[in-house]
Amino acid sequence: MENFLLVGNGAREHSIAEAVCRGGNARLFAFMSANNPGIARLARESDGKYGIGDIHSSSQVVSFAKQYGITLAFPSPDAVLAAGITDALQAQGILCASPTLEAARLEWDKSYCRDLLRDYKVPGSPAFGIFENAQEASQFIDSLQGSVAVKPAGLTGGKGVKVVGYQLKDGAEAKEYSRDLLATRHGGLNSIVVEEKLEGEEFSLQAFSDGSKVHGMPMVQDHKRAYENDVGPNTGGMGSYSGTGNLLPFTRQKHYEEALGIMQKTIEAFRKKTGNKFVGILYGGFMLTREGPKLLEYNARFGDPESMNVLALLKDDLAEILSQMAAGKIGKSPLFEKKATVCKYLAPEGYPGKALTNQPLQINSQAIGSFGAKAYYAAVYEEDGIIYTQSSRSIALVGMADTISDAERIAEGACGSVIGKVWHRKDIGTDALVKRRVDHMKALGVL
Image 1 (cartoon, rainbow, N blue to C red):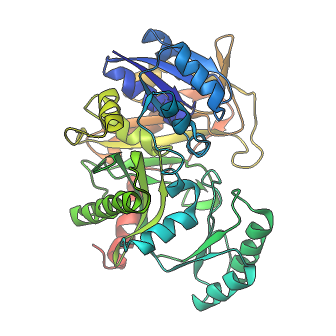
Image 2: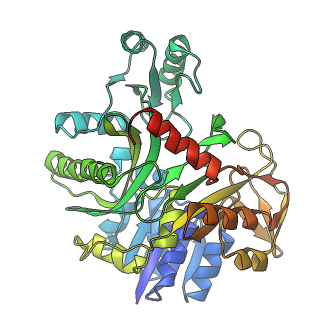
């Protein structure tokens, strides 16, 4: 029986906690920055404990781990990995299934990642440039006729990327945004990445990496734009869906294999460059184009909301997979249910701008269960048995079924079982939205 430590407290971490406890071979110990009611309940039910503190503090996390005799740890959020929490735990002899600070640099430093892929000839990168000088960035933007994506090199919670034709009107606005990023060091680093704008459909591919091999999970499509029909500002993700089996309706097996091949070559390149292994979850954000999958960026952890799609489908014991990863060898590729999933996020009114906080939510758990849905708590807190909103996404509802259509109906029905000042994108996973994705790829000649 593992004493398993999970560091983090969002809906992503709630789904990880549930999958770990589902196997029945781990006691859950959670160290959180705020009390996630779902994670706290799972810790109690598994005969574990939870603590509240600074999840970015090595001393606090290590102290909690040592107090409870942790045998396996999984620091989860990006900022926690960038704070070196994995390294601190490993220094105390605690096995971790999460990347070190050096390995997580694939996520927290986009310029480092692009350089690595270029230097080791890993395929799949768009045309790009890395800049610390605004004038040089402007010249590069002109060389691509202003059709670009501009990215802070550092972490921005998924909200820093702006693309011409979406968040930016034209090349002039791209240059202005580049200047602003460099002046403010948005993301904490002094460089930006400017890339050619790609035409296609985005998908997420997550994989378990034991340092030698990546084992892929089902593809997922996230929806970053706040409002229906993919308009509005970027968010942390308003919801996501996965198809039956590993593929999405607009992808083919060759696309899956090409994307996973890029990820495999990436961990090999990292090992060649550093002499160290990338152990943990590697998440590739891809654009499927006429030329095949192109890598937009890497995350060094599960996606949020994508973790909820894939972990709902996982047939094997997550604690055992993570234990094998930490030990350096996954015995066999994990198995997933051949079903579809749809995840819809309820967010407080005003999100992603000035969100209404401290608003009570009436959650009919019995009704959610009757739909066959799962609920995962995100930025909420519990007081006297009542759940209240905070300033970010509140609750994710996940439906699983034989088709995306049926999974969508389950998730949408479950959303109606939560009453309060929250809203969600109703179009995620609908037949109309999925058809637009497929039609788009047909028009590009991909399908």
